[in-house]
Length: 170
Image (cartoon, rainbow, N blue to C red):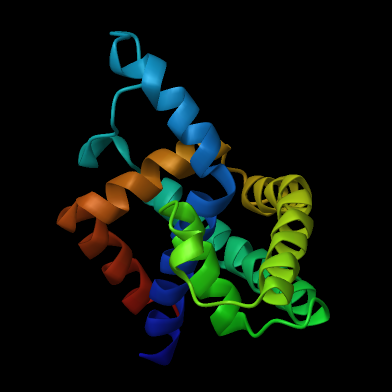
């Protein structure tokens, strides 16, 4: 039971990391693809083999390990800039909504936030590369992993198959 919770958490963590790491690229790809009839179709439940799902689960576990290490490195950057993780997160959310000025922060905190954010953004290409290598080490290509991730997030039948697979795992 604990293993199943850990793998579910791993899949969720990998999903978050993929959104963060590949979000900009995905958004850039989605804009032209919306008008493009040749965009890659969403996988159907029957198109995903048990082997695909096994690779997906294993790749998700590897991706979560990369995510955990990356998260530690990002926290270290924030702390080196003398900000709490909570303050940085609050400011990052406000920045995404273009409301950074609405966050109560000193000039020093804003400068520290900017410096930490720049350093973290500079880390992203390496994190993306490490994530992709971790996933592909399981024999699954990124596009297939992303398709299965989407299917897993949106399809109860895929979730049930993964659940069953996890229950059968020794």
